[in-house]
Image (cartoon, helix red, strand yellow):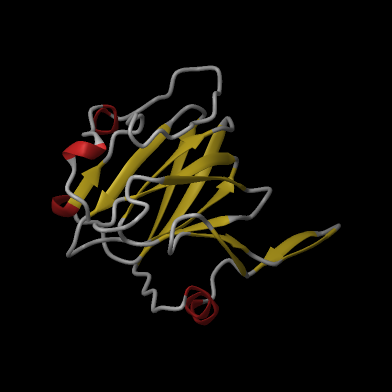
Length: 182
């Protein structure tokens, strides 16, 4: 496993070592000891989530506040998504900045999103299966949402030639200037 740093401190793209031949492939998708050594701190995953979405579905930008803030290790196991993280950490020099990565079944890449970031993704393929490992349990009372098209954040979502499909809570989410930093 190789951690590829981003412009945002603590946020990493994870490139696993994949072994392939005419039979298929094998890779270690998770190793507790190696991951903690790579990120340099304890990462206690407690919950796994799996979603399936159609082309054009945009999920996010979601986060959880303390005391149930979540770190997420995410990957796409079928299809392709454009995955985004937005820095919401109080006092961070990159507050309000974002990073995006293409995650797919073909590239095996993962994205480590530590607590303090909003997270979302856009499905680019006909369907996509998306897996999340989280460092805390889902807590609706701590849940927050950042508007996906906030002009201050300025995410450059890929043009897929059709309108995005959003849940009401994502479509009507507050802007960055209306949120308290995490």
